[in-house]
Length: 359
Image (cartoon, rainbow, N blue to C red; front, side):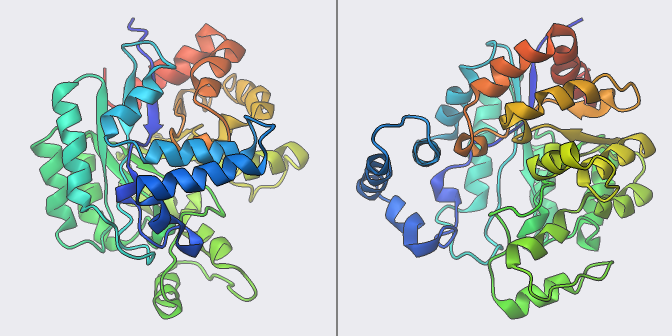
């Protein structure tokens, strides 16, 4: 049996793929030039010159990665922590409709760059297409990169303002189900990457929820968590039972921490996802970003001993988003050493081969 490692969740998008108002105080605009980026990162480093591993240093590393001039070079930074034949599911980001200003580079150019990488590395690169149904001709865009460039599946990022059961996505789901293309969706709460547009438009988006949302006294960040709620996918799985869907981050470190303190909370997203893994045959999750905290390694090992769900959990790191918390070595080496070869290869080989249709 092949022992190739599959990292089922990484990003290689560049700073030119990020809206100008994505960060406050004009920071993105400052970072647009190499001079501005160098000034900013030097200032962050000087705040705590005695540490090479604090939060500010990690943000410097994150910023510098985004400034790299090609997605191929960003990927190469990630690859050095893995065996040379490792395969990577690359998830692009279409942030043009999150209400955070203009994106310098057209989204198709980001996809074209991935397509060229796929052409040059046909077995190593497994690119997905992020679809936001607010983009004109999104369905044609999706089919173009699947059929003409060999992209491998659908990426969703609900906190940008889209519920997974949005009917505009249904033709895409139908196409994916028919062609055995998997879906990977962001699924963690209170994320900084969320809809930042006008209040009037935000209210319209929230009104599309199938369940009541209490917005009184809640921040935009907390309200946007409703877009990512894993129970939203119950509607999708009901209508598309043969569609393979992975909700990323296994509920997030926020809910893993809560689970360790109060494991009986049925509304905890970790518990919700566990139940859905058992209920829906084609429902999966991954451990990306969440395992940046080594205190969760033991719980993951226990979950991987549960035969009801252990074949539905995927290895992923969330490079380079995870650079703000740790480095890729945590996923590429430390987790493997902790779990041992048998469990690690179930997580990083057997399970993703089935989900990604690489058998």
